Image (cartoon, rainbow, N blue to C red; front, side, top):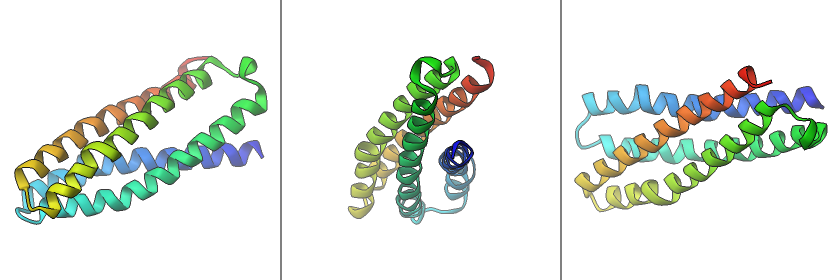
Length: 147
C-alpha cells in the first residue's frame, strides 16, 4: 500500500506541475505568437480542461499525502514531509484563488469578447501559476534536502 500511495502521489504531482509548465512555457507563448483573436478563447478552453485534471490531482495529492503521513505518524514523519504538507496547502489555496478569481473572470471576459480584460486575467493566471510552480519545486526539494 505505501508504494501505491507514493506512486499515485508522484503521478498527481507530475500531472499538475507538468500541466503548469506546459501552459506557461509552451502553449501561452505559442498562442501569443501565432494567434490573434483566437488566443484568449483557446487559453480559456485549455485551462478549463486542465483545471479539471488539476482538481483531481489536488484531491489525490491530499489523500495520498495524508495517508502516508498518518501511516508513519505525524511526529515520526521526516521534516521534509511536514514542509511538503505546508507548501502543498499553500499551493492548494493559491490554486483555489486562481480558479475562483482570475480564471472565472477570464471566462466572463472571453464570453463578453472583452479582450483587454481577458488578457489581463491571463497575465494574472500566469503569475499565480508561476508562483505555484516555484512552490511545487520547493515541495519536491523539501523531500530531498530535509531529512
